[in-house]
Length: 232
Image 1 (cartoon, one colour):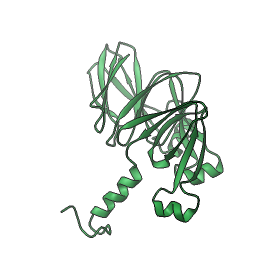
Image 2 (cartoon, helix red, strand yellow):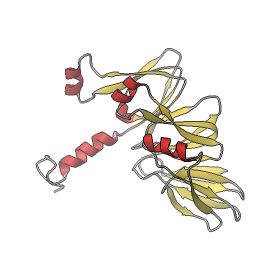
Image 3 (cartoon, one colour):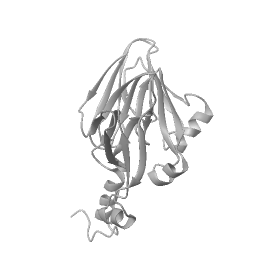
Image 4 (cartoon, one colour):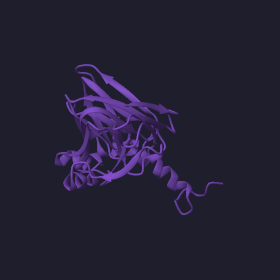
């Protein structure tokens, strides 16, 4: 299977070329266009329980399965939000933890399920008690809100990331959720609130925009949103 991420940045589009018999699974509604030789169907990919688990983490119950059943063909896929697409190769030696809405598509060897966070992380993170867990061997395509930036940490190195900017990180990395400042009042005044502190070795993928922050900004521009005016 060959692929290309087109128009990287704000309006990325994923082009996948499938040989006869190859398949790719994608988030429900991700297909933009496909060759006549491609067949699309809905699947829970792992059964009802795994589908329910994905719903708890903020993903959809069903996947799209796009198969080159009648010969080779091409598929175009895109996320629902404005942002970038990043391909990550998994060799089966670790799992990838992904924030909700971060999974776009994956090859047939990729499995998408959920991981339950502990009580304190679930309460503090704002993502809930379940996050997306991606495993297996193959290629997974992640989507973001804004551009994707990779932070490479060496052994023992640390980085602090605002929760709303997280995209994905490997499950073997140590991380804690904490206040942005020493006190709750300072955290609230700074506008940051909660952050994740990661310790390397490993790669943390972050997004250049915060969906909740954008939603708050947009709300102020709408009539009755408290911003003192509309778009004009």
